[in-house]
Image (cartoon, rainbow, N blue to C red; front, side, top):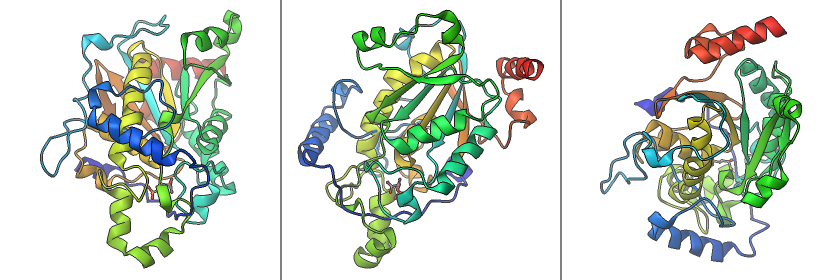
Length: 341
Ligand SMILES: O=C(O)[C@H](O)COP(=O)(O)O
């Protein structure tokens, strides 16, 4: 089974109470409305919501919920963004943030904005070493500091030494205002786009609670269902399906066009927002995704080629020959780096 490929150990986390949820119920209601009306789901405009996933063939049946289309892209999804490269091939790196202070304490974290632990910082740096020879043209992160720190720390290790700069991308005007006019600066920098749609799923009333204590109180099975099932939300929180509604919509609307235009993309996000995106990329069923676990701070590489996503696992290190054998472009880039540095 495809999910078995993801051997990363599950981080242990636990829960607690959610501090910033004044509008929480309203948001959940909105999410449900959006779920009912899936065709109208857009990653733009809304403030807070959940994500959704799709992998390859997501079958629709009583036990296997259909999430989205297979990953091949229709002509209507041709890139509309700035694209000077003409290529139907690109690299996609996914990284779950390094261990956070609440991961360390085994607390359910969800949308709470918790920074990295010391170990998490080391993991982010280590992740950066693993991808240090893979070109990155644009970075997407969630709006949460643990994902943003992971992306920045990882990029400190990159051989090309480009500087990540934050770009506001939420509207045409924001994009205009964020423009970098100097061609030299553009070449020496990497745009970073932060978006709430890539946030961790909202864990509702579990946020801030200890995971082990919650399992002791409600039972292991119940807690496993809240954490790993596709469509059972934790109390007042988001199910993976709800999380996928926002994350996969965002991926399709904002990230795929970049890949289609030949840009290499890195996404630094979270256990469940990335699970939903991987479900989409690998066409996992709602049953298969249950066993998909992501470790903190482990980069995963996909090659986007002819409208399809090809999973290439996790680069072991910058010298790993196999990574650069995947595509001619990666190999050439690596060769250029070797000559320059
Ligand atoms: O929000 C959290 O607690 C973690 O980031 C993910 O937790 P999980 O492994 O319980 O989904």
